[in-house]
Image (cartoon, rainbow, N blue to C red; front, side, top):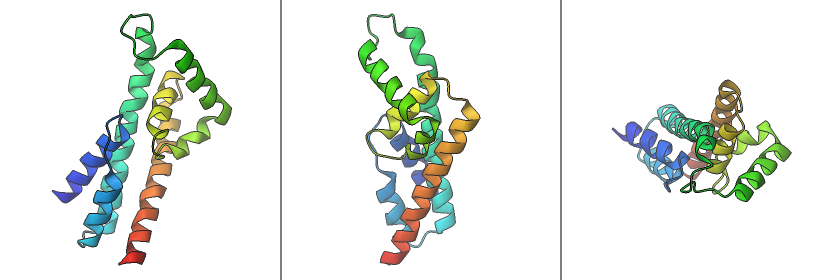
Length: 140
């Protein structure tokens, strides 16, 4: 059940909802749960949450002419310009707080191919969780 909780927390943390999978990961690691399963649960959940963002971004522009559309044209243009400046490789940093979730949505808006998106996001998130587990082992 702990691994599923970490998966779910990682999934929620990757969407636009606030959550912290890192704290749960470190707490479970300190309790003696298997690091490889913790890594897999956190990486898989967090990556799948980002995939939801990509899909929402992909579908987002269909509604840009609606009065209730939550993003101004100027904000969308700024986000698009920023993403294009740094390119697809910026998806390796989709794990960063504050900018990571919108980054994955913009990738969907800009129609970044899903396979490339998945590869870059999973790689970045997997490395981040591996580093956290390694640091956690250094502390205990």
